[in-house]
Image (tube, protein in one colour):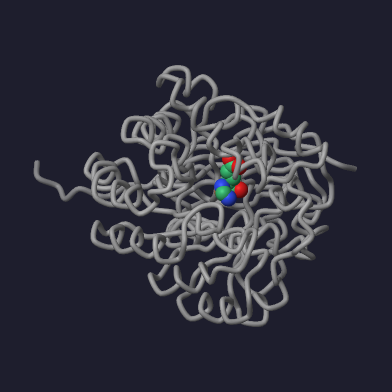
Length: 423
Ligand code: NIG
Ligand code: FE
C-alpha cells in the first residue's frame, strides 16, 4: 500500500453574520456579510463570505447560518474573586448608613470577614457557592475568566480556593486562569506582623501553589489597608523566582506608586488605578502593562475619583474592563453591565469598552497570541449576539443579547441557529 497520507481538513462554517473582529483598521474590525471557518479548536479563516477560499468551501462539514447575528470574540473577564464563601450584604447595609469601606476593613470586617466564611467552606461548598457566579458570566458570552485566591490567607484555604477555581474550569465550558493573591489582606494571626506574613506567603504558600500547578499569576493588594510597596516588591521577587507573571491591585484608594512598581516587574496588568499619576501611566506604557478598569468597584464604593483614562489613552496604555466580581467592593454578576459603566463613569467609547473585554483583556492575561480577536490561527472562542450594532453591548444595560457561544470551536448554545433579531 504505502500511499502518502494526505492531511484532510474539515471546517465548520458560520455565515450570514456581521463580524466585530476587534482587529484591523475599521471600527470594531467590522466585516459585513462575514463568514468564519473553524477547524478543530481554531479559527481557520475570517472575512467577507464572498471571499471565502474555494478549498475551504469544498471542505465544509457543517454550515451554520447565524441568521444575521453579530459575532464578537469570546468575552474575557480578566479580574475576578468569584471563588469565596458567604456574602457581605450586612456590610453593604452598614456602608449605606455611612460607614466607609476603609473603616470596616480597619475594624477587621471587609475582606477579613470573607476570609472567615471561606475558611469555613469545604471544597464542595466553595464549588457550590461559586458555580452560580460563574454561570451568570457564562450566560453573557464569557469564554475565559481569571479567578484569584486571597480569601484564605492560610496554606490550606488559599490552595483550596485555587483548586476550586481549576475545578470550575473543568466543570464548565470556560477557560480559567488562576491568580495567587495571598497578599490580599493581613490575617488576624499575623496582627502587627505583616512582614512575617509576607515571609509566609513568599516562602511557603506561593511555592506550594506553584509546585502544584495551581497558580498562573501572582497578584498583590498594594494599599494602605493592605500591603506596602516594599512588601509588594518582596512578593514580586518571589513570583519572579518561580517564573510567575505578576499583577497588582494598585492606586484604588490612594496613590502608592504600586502600578509603577509592578511595571518594573513587567506586570501583565495593574488594576483599579483610580489614583494613578501620570508618572505611573508612563511606567505602565514603558513596560506594556495593561490597565484593568473596574467600574463595578468604583460604583459600589461610591468612589468619586476616576482612573485617568485620558492619560492612559495619551500614553497608549491598553485598557481592559472587568467585573472584579467579589463580595465586598463589586458583587457584580454582569460583564456587559461593566461595559455600560465604563462608558458612563469612565468615558470609554463603546468600542474601547468592547476591546476591554476582548483584545485588551486577553493582553491582561498574557493570552493575546491565542485569544481576544477574530483572526485565523486564534482559538475559536466567539459569541453570537442579537444586536443591530456592536455599541448596543455597552448601550443597553440589564439585557443579555447573547444567543450563541462557541468555545474551542464547539457550539455551546443550541439556539444559535435561530437568533431573534432586531427588525
Ligand atoms: O478588587 N481591592 C482589593 N480587593 C478586592 C475587594 C475585596 C473585598 O472587599 O472583598 C477588590 O476590590
Ligand atoms: Fe480585585
